[in-house]
Length: 221
Image 1: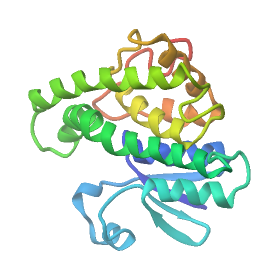
Image 2: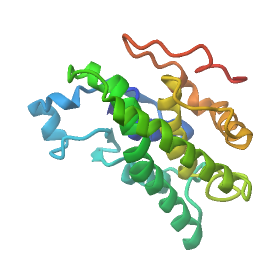
Image 3: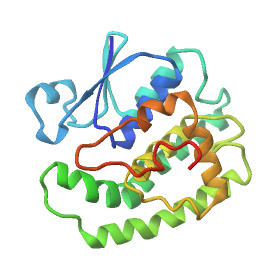
């Protein structure tokens, strides 16, 4: 059995979950309190990070490396382009969301509003929350600009870039921190990816003490 050690609102774990589901790989989800740095967890990944995937006789870490491994070893559907220029653009955008977007938005909103409480680290820092709420507007505008030129974020086919972006936005949407009225183009893109069968397990997530908004699982939001 393939097993994924994760936490529900981690965008990195969500990206791997989307990839596994799109590839139709059955997976057992195991919630990992990674911040406790338990010895067994540290043996699985000495970097002390999630996600960790047990699959194909291997224990794997780092979400981008995991997703690309799955794409290379499971033929269909392809989530990375076949040409070098296309793969570059997908990797560039995955890095944009997993590094820049994560630093400027996800860590300032999801981590402040949810993770701090779960980890018993105190109350949200209002300056961080304000900063994240401001910076997400810039990122939504950039996504809109990309999508006005392409069917999907990295080109005319759905790729890991779309999963990286959707993983972050879905975590933010769980806490009502995305203004979907800012761009109809981005909203239409999210509705399209949100409607895929691979998204269903994300829409069923429940974090104790943090009920999702009514629109979270609504495909016609």
